[in-house]
Length: 173
Length: 364
Image 1 (cartoon, helix red, strand yellow):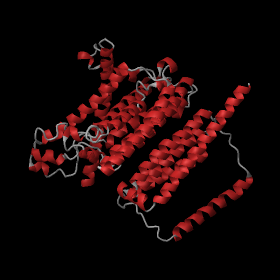
Image 2 (cartoon, chains in turn blue, cyan; image 1 turned 135 degrees about the vertical axis):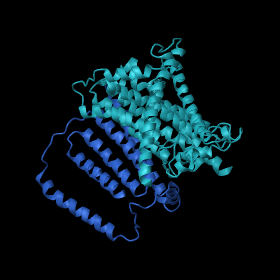
Image 3 (cartoon, helix red, strand yellow; image 1 turned 45 degrees about the vertical axis):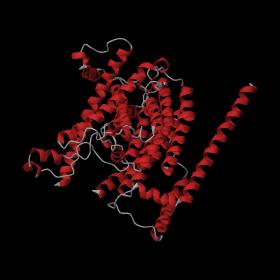
Image 4 (tube, helix red, strand yellow; image 1 turned 90 degrees about the vertical axis):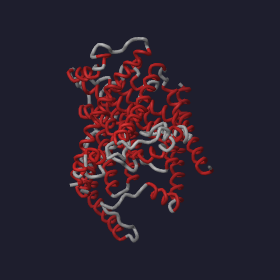
């Protein structure tokens, strides 16, 4: 049962990712990315990470991708023109991807103490997750929140800066 | 054998609940037409059936028989996909909602009919909840956040400026108020210590109305925030800017006709019911009895099964009544007022509620 579900959603995930690259219209690519995100959520669920799956749908599927589609709609982006790409990219691209994947795979396979999760393992409850998150991993958690705060401040600074410039420009006219 | 029973039982439950939900949607439309009619000193629909009770069926037949127009210049695949996403998301949510006492099993009824029948029915087939998910509350939030795409894609793919403006307004509104909505639920989760909807309700069932989260749990501020955010999330008056007729003709569904329009319509009323269900579960004690043990408890299986269902439906109905009442009496917000209200009032208030609830829980 787990294996069937894994094959279905892993296939869906890969199909979405390939479709994302092949589509020429940005909105189709954005929607394919949503398919990828939600099928990843199902894969997390199969590994017993319930909270992570729900958070994946809410944060990536809901919030971030809404902003993506929002931007596509607001900019009214049209169909991209298909170019064949540079010859160098085609010559080096595929070997580079293979090399990077090989490096990542060896690092993960040789890493010690990662632990193992099987498809049919029990579900990790939100209680256990929060207990680890707020005791053992408290420092990284708080540092991440500071990082996000800096990003928000940066966005506000950029927005207010360009806003005042636009006002000056209208004032000059 | 058991897995076969489980699958058959789940399919049956899904089918029955979906049909009931669709009927509920149809009759919520009638409720709204009747009530708004009375508020405006007229009768509402009266001609079809006694008191106009068959009106929703005729409405449905009419939207089926209308010509299905797909305007030229629309982005066809997304134009067709959008109403499906909207209606699908609004029908899925009931799957995690416990709408009666979930501890009642099919086996109990079989036992009532006779031990011979009971020997065929395995235990564990619960009647009043389709699936008991540990992170039920997050599932609800997740599906709601996916529901935005229905409206956004409809507006964009219609190739119409009014539709696009309606969709942009709607997405901005949903994204803004979803924050306040999510934060308002944190107080309840802090009190309950779980995200499982069944457990959240069971904790409110001990002393009747006094242990409901809105009264005994001191979550009335959270309930107020949830109420406001829920009105905005479902695009209902006074937050119905995405389809403001005087400004945008019809908003995101301007270019839709026939059954596709009806699907958006049904999605809106389905979302109203969902929001009512969530409010009932989180703040109003779910299926539990408002009198607690005041009148004693019964051991009759039919009383145990049907009374919780009755209380749940009654609570959701009161919520829907409130919805229509507000629609009949409140004028529409302006767009800047809407955004100011969401970001400058509701969100800080929700944060304060979280801080206050945590302090109360820590030092009581």
